[in-house]
Image (tube, rainbow, N blue to C red; front, side):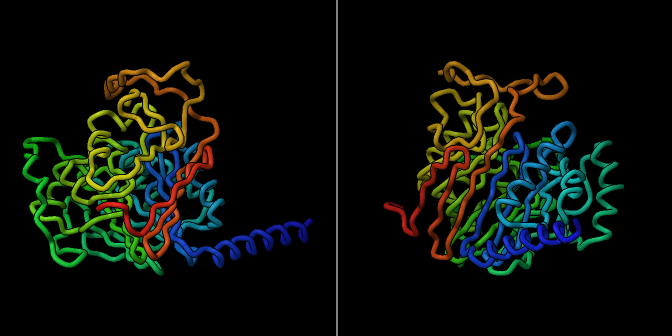
Length: 370
């Protein structure tokens, strides 16, 4: 029996090493955590970075197992770095269940919680403190470089602070800033604290800003664009509104939204993505009932549906449900979940694959028109 177990462990280790040795791309797995967030990055050397750990509560086990399934597909047996963008339950809620299933070597965050919440505070002061005391713990600030072999991983926002020096050459005036006036008197939340990352792999560039608010997006991108452009925009705020001065100025070729069935991808957000100057395609982690036929994307670009299918997609988008305790439950999707996988090459060519239907599309290093 012992020999069988050892043989099984050896075969698993050999398979993991084989994946790492043959991988030549930066691979990204946008995991379906039902409108939460969990994106796994794996470098050619096999080093891994997970951004956020999904939902808590009833969804914690479900989301943790979906993340582990993606890690297994990637040949990852431990998470080298876990970056928590902020302390909302749909971004950190699944962490306790996740750590029970896979080792995590480093925890990265923005520092103390600024939005009191009994459940989150209890976890941060108990389970999270214990986890970070036994592993490496990094509080990151704008301008920091997270050491990951083969990848330039820069922090551009953290704890309401934004990057002040340009990443690529000189900062350039951002013409889209004139169309926005920062909101006054709004309550600050953990969204404002979001730990945002700009990731470069050779000529390939992508960005992940957590749930960064419009006011903080404005501080990051205005009056000048200090980030340059990206090939892929992992849309912040779950595909809710990412301002033109961000989504248009970054000029992404592809947008991926980590939305839920009734969270994100509503008309005002989708119009901004569709009209971005260089965008070729928008991919959705989930079918959104808020889009309707006018503002959705073809089904081949949508990774997950709902367990009980509708007879027909509604023509008109549904209004967003009320927020807070009165929010009705979203349509069920607790069965098989699929992720969107992005594989980027150092020359800037990258392929996006919908794991539900196997549809993939490759985007060349130079667009047909810029």
